[in-house]
Length: 322
Image 1 (cartoon, helix red, strand yellow):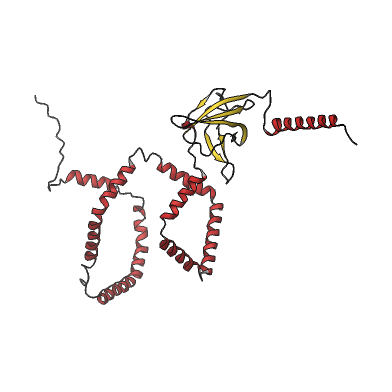
Image 2: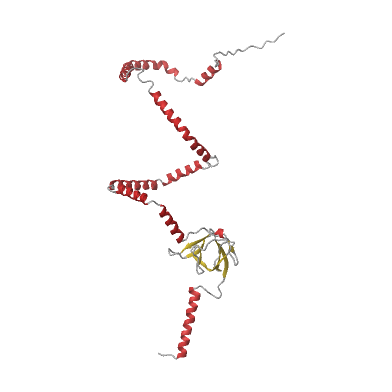
């Protein structure tokens, strides 16, 4: 079927208008009735942002970056926020990467979506934005870290680890078994461990008010001077422990004495047991008698003074004179 040139041009014009409308409304999110809130975000550095970067709130797209201008102290980033979304003013802000390639976007992360909200003309200060590290900065820091490493030390560490793993399959198996048992113990005693940690937290609560840190710091300063004296005390105890050697003769003589004492005790055990059995009826009435040793100690202390004298208390009757 063939169309006339005029009809073909009309069809092409209609398809072009439909495609442009789709690109505007569906892809570019541009609509004649759509409302935006124009907000200015102050930054110390762009962090890789572009005028086409997205603006999200908890991962949901709520706007885009409209432009970036320089200021005397940094940058002013113009944001067009979708009027259908309410973004709290107190929201923390981060500049994140969409992927490892480094496409940055602005993400609002409010703890609670509640008023007051950002409105048209709002200015967000730079201190609201969390510090960000770009991919280039991260690579530069990693390069500085690697440059600071000593290749010989790294080689030594790798060699030691390799030597520790080689031909130690049984040890590694035992380590894996021990780790599994430990994990099982933690899982089975989770409530007990939680109680333990809670008790430790309770015990350590308030240590700051007791100035514990300063006490430990002062103790650490005093320990170096105390250690030599402590070692000397241990040596004195060691010397004192050998002072009584050979007082009762050699070790063999002491052993003979203890052996003979054991024989005497065994010999007297039978008669003493018989004697104790005979005395049981005579001592039965005394079993209920309780002796207050504290009372007698108080009486002794009140009677005899530290100087060796004896205190005597006399009760003198009253005498009425005529």
